[in-house]
Amino acid sequence: MIKNDTLLTAAILVIAVLFLVYTSLHYEGARYVEIDAINTTKIVLVEIANDPISYERGLMGRENLDKDSGMLFIFDDEIYRSFWMKNTLIPLDIIFVSSNYTIVDMKENFMPCDSDPCQTYSSKNPAKFVIEVNAGYVKDHEIEIGDNVKIY
Image 1 (cartoon, rainbow, N blue to C red):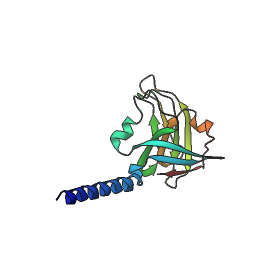
Image 2: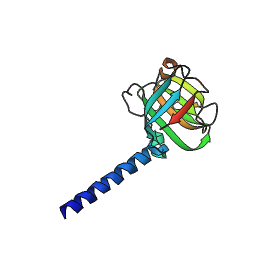
Image 3: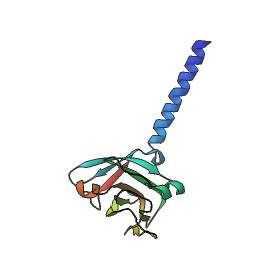
Image 4: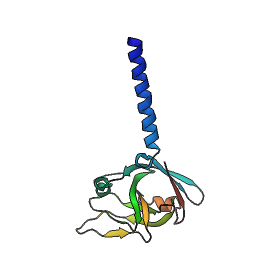
């Protein structure tokens, strides 16, 4: 009886691991993005924002963001996007990405908002995805409009 219980438990664990691997390959479970820049490919480890609560929270309250880390916002539609820095403690670069995974706009070195109302930063073109990274990331890695992005 113990052997059967052990085999059943092992089978359940294998199924659970396979399920987690499968979902991590889908947008909502993405864990990193790859940006094909001029002379290099950059990997950004990302947290996911894919619902109204996580969109609003974003990176608010964070005192730091690890190097080559960020947040990936995944939206259901492709429209002009607006972001603000309310309650954000660290300066950021914002990368707007179209549904065909091309960078369509970027906002660099946006500082935390000190007053209310906060200024908003809107994309010049419609975007389905938005990546927030540490300020200076875009310049340091020579990322440009037109570069391609892959989501994993």
